[in-house]
Structures are given as structure tokens and as C-alpha cells.
Length: 143
Image (cartoon, rainbow, N blue to C red; front, side, top):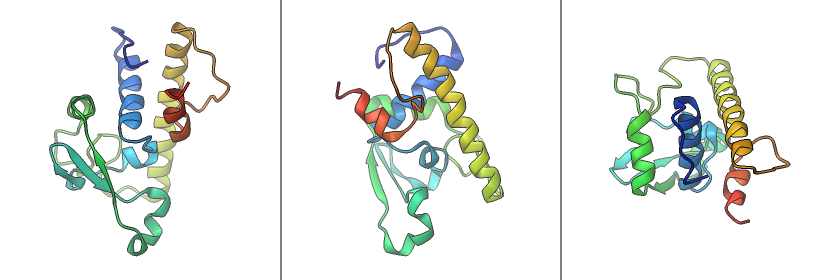
């Protein structure tokens, strides 16, 4: 999948976010959509508190994720260019929690649908239909 090429911009974007998740240690898509520009500490790494543990922020130290050149390229291709505090233009400031959750679910569904097309084109058969699950992203490359 890392070498898959397409002229279809939707497939390219879905694959890029899937690869970004993989390159960021299988980062959960809920965490990807909530990365803020302020989380960027340098050109080659960022920190974040997982959405899953964010209610207990004071008990957890932020995770630090190093970015290789391909992850930086993907990030630069899709990052927000306006005053949006979020790194990627999936969310914007002032959204209610339910709206954030719904947008994240829609984004994961959107990526999954396009990854299924790529999977079929490559002749890959997988049992798990949630291609965006962090364990699936990481386990894909173990086989």
C-alpha cells in the first residue's frame, strides 16, 4: 500500500491519512483529527494527549510522535492554511463534542470506504472492515 499510485484524488487522500496513521505509530484517527497546530513542537515531531484519555489529562503526559519525511509531506499537503487551530481542516474551533464525534466517525467511514477500493484493486483480502483501526493499520505490515 505504501507504493500504491492513483490519479483519483479521493483515494490518494484516504491512503495518505491511512499512511499518516501508520507512520505515527498507528495513531487513532480520532487523535489525528484533533491535532492542533499548537501541538507541533518542531518540523519533525508533535505531541498530543489521546482523545481516549483526555478527560484525565492531568494524569497523563502527552505522547510524542516523530515525523519522517513522508509524514511531513502528507501533513503539509492537507494541513489547514487559515486561522483554524486544528492541523487538518476536518474540525474547527467552537464545535460541540457531539459534532466533533460525528465528524470523526464520518471521516473514518469516508477513509474506510476508499481504502476498501484500494484493497480490492491490490487484491488484498482482509477480515476487518475497519481499516482505520490503529491495530489494523499497524498489523497490516506485520504480515
